[in-house]
Image (tube, rainbow, N blue to C red; front, side, top):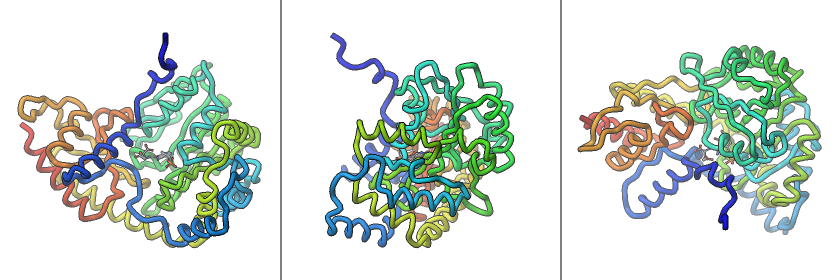
Length: 398
Ligand code: PMP
Ligand code: GLU
């Protein structure tokens, strides 16, 4: 008798979460492991947000809420889009879910089906491809080049489109490269998207984590004709250091939002009532802590880039957002650690975990085997210590 559904064999566990679990287990066993692995702010959730959650508990706000989220939070989301993006949404176009990941999965489930192809510019975040497999769609990873700032060009998009193409996922600032799409590139892509009548899933989760004088933009901000063809996936995990609270949200055409609400009502009911009250405080409350976090991340990005530049053979484009760097380490392929020849990003990351005590995600999970992904949501001290150890371990290879 078949034990499990075939779809389970289409995916592997999330490599970012798996590495984080491994690093935590090594630390618990007393090893000095510095984690550049998981993409998670190392700050606490700001006090006023935590207080709002405590108040929600004290007030007994502990029961089921509407499945697609409380009106107060949907209104706060609409206000955020008006304020930050000049995009007008009504609460009926918004759904609150259990984290950005859940939001994306719901969107894919409602938009795509077997036979559909969905274009994902690569390198790409580890979960798009497995989620698309789970809903039966075919992810089409289109490799982008560091020479184009790892952004998809209109020619690359055009070349990947077939009669089966139904959608495109855009993630800017990007996990894993930290690169962002500028207004000019988005305008060029919009022309192709409109010509082929595609859905856009815009993963804007790193919107606020953007550096220097770089300006955030997404497709419906740049091309209003795409408003009806775009679903924005967003969440509070990164902006407000709220990874554990599990709050994500979408905004898009009402028919998509209502479909997601229907699915959610049958599969999970509402997101956590207490987290929703905290999310209202996050979106409507003071935003200074976001600015402070961005300042720290920007400083750490510069520090990481300086230290990486000091390692012979390692090259790394300068990211404008998120909190990741994506250096090319392939100059070390073919070198030996004892008898083992290191041939892949997985080999290199495994070697660095063993010999340098640093947890770093191999680029393979993001669709690029020449690279490693480092999260710099790590203290300055650990960055200096960790990258010092990485350099020493790489130079020790024969
Ligand atoms: N999109 C991207 C690109 C991410 O890096 C993450 C981080 N996990 C998410 C979505 C989802 O975040 P969360 O589920 O924590 O809200
Ligand atoms: N997005 C973060 C990362 O890429 C968190 C882990 C995950 O969701 O994959 O590390």
